[in-house]
Length: 394
Ligand code: G3P
Ligand code: CA
Image (cartoon, rainbow, N blue to C red; front, top):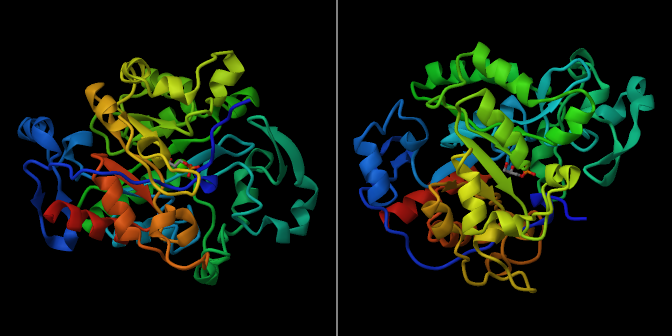
């Protein structure tokens, strides 16, 4: 049975060929860059791009703070989100969305929160520990759907990968779990405070799993976006999911830009497994599959390995045709995830073997940007912004 592969178990790849950025302009302050990727995007910019211009107003390649600035702070906390903005991220992935028992959307990478909170240190919740089958995978721990929001608010966030990010444990216990409604208010506050539009990129996590529990998440997300006036085509909120039918559902509820996440070529979206749709990701990345996605979404978020596969030694091979094919279908590409630490880099960019040491992240960014991608999710937005400056300025 194929399932989506978490990028925790995957690393990134690179490619060849400098991408022409016609009309690219460095704006200067804070290193912000307005990249206009090619004549088409330049034409778009002349026809309503820029501030208020929706997706097309974003710098390209767009730097997306993955779970905030999770290379430096425990993920999906306001500490992480705010640092991502401080470091120059164009968009903050705030957050991965999962529901509570009483129907609130909260920001956690997974419904299981044993690895990202101090829940194990709360004896009052010891009896909530469960083993569940989550998208076909037996998973043991504590699950957001078994807690009320008030209960979750008594927990504090912790670093998920302390072996790779020992310094981040300094911040364990500092921040609580954000709700998505708090994120929407925070977005408004930060936009006012910083004098620039702050974008967010929430992901619907395991929507089929939650719908079967009576906790459908798409309608809850749409209701919140409507309540805050952020459900429009030009709203600074992009919505993503690994389940194509969830994105299709969102396309009927709101007008926001939408992106279908794509895991490894052999994987199969869980909604397809549940509905008996035999297609795998390999089918979705064909020109035909991409054309269908483009009928309800504006972008794709492929794992970097779909852009540049690796060989058996973990070294990059030649880029696939995915960038070209997606652009031909009218889709933007925001692949995931670039991280600075050795274990997450392609083998040729590693420096030594320490799991918490940085490799040549700039080399990896350069290689990926050269494929023509429109943006990238990264745990290290400051590195991404500098890499973009290098790339755009040649
Ligand atoms: O949403 C892009 C990327 O975050 C997808 O993978 O597992 O980190 O949510 P994941
Ligand atoms: Ca995500």
